[in-house]
View 1 (tube, rainbow, N blue to C red):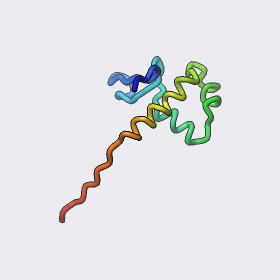
View 2: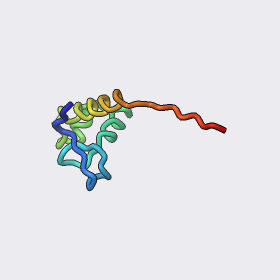
View 3: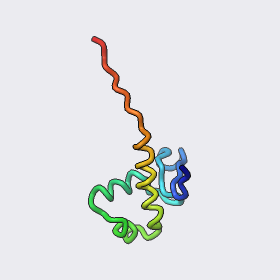
View 4: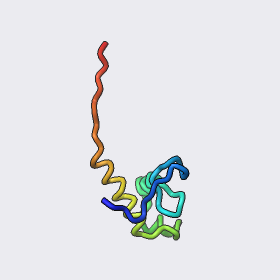
Length: 77
């Protein structure tokens, strides 16, 4: 899957995925939404973020969480 608005650079926020040309990370967008902010609220507070970029941040997170693999490791005592 190709993401137009999301990038990652080890020199910016330690390589966290961010909205291109900002220092706003995907996880911050998710935190705002989880706290009750709408896409319109986020866009109003940060007009440099296109609505499409905010939506893509959510899609990005969903894509990578959907494909995450969980492995249970049991300790042997």
